[in-house]
Length: 303
View 1 (cartoon, one colour):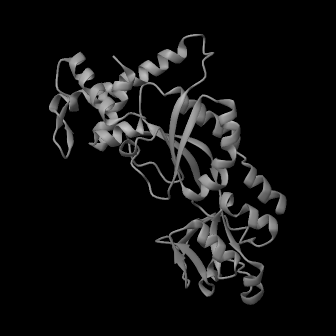
View 2 (cartoon, helix red, strand yellow):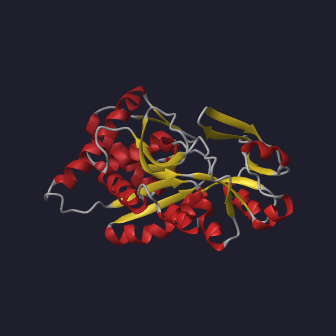
């Protein structure tokens, strides 16, 4: 069974368009159509309904699809096991990541990754939306949100520590809050739908409903507004560490830690076999960031 034929079939199951699926794999429409014909001939069944407008899976195609995924994973693992692991992973690795984190931390580290694995190429898509990995044909996703899809597996890459920040100019004009309760008299900048700030207390969680004259759907915009003195904001240290180093931002309410700290996760579809290219990507960035990432160390040096 030809691996290229299987990859094309899997992409067709998502795109329903032979030109688009072929283009993603570097194939012309004619070659892609020929590959599917050969796959159907080898199986002795028709896998696709073809019209001039759309392609859809037949009942046999739907039944074959999960096995195509498994066969591809097995073939890739088998190839990489030959030669006692001397062969480096190769091919294209499709990655999706949050825009700000990807730009600030993934892109700078990709140089070392691609030098270590020269036979790999990376297709990196940056978006703050939670994309469907199967629909988008992604091998791995970087996320800092709770995993809700049971068909996916998550591996922690590093911590995502969050702190409350303010610009010195704001504190000079409005004073520095000494307790969470004092936030009610301050301008608090928030991401959409996250205006309740929760603090860890010995007696339990303390929830403070905040208010402010600015909310946004973009973390970098909120951080920049905070640095301009528009108000207080909760920021991830990976986003704010450079502003903390330069003095544009300072941490406030240090003695009142937030109760909900998160993590940065590498997420991939569940499978009996993890593709070597995905494994080396996760291993590399897990080692790159670690439990004490460089941005948290930079923040500690400031404090």
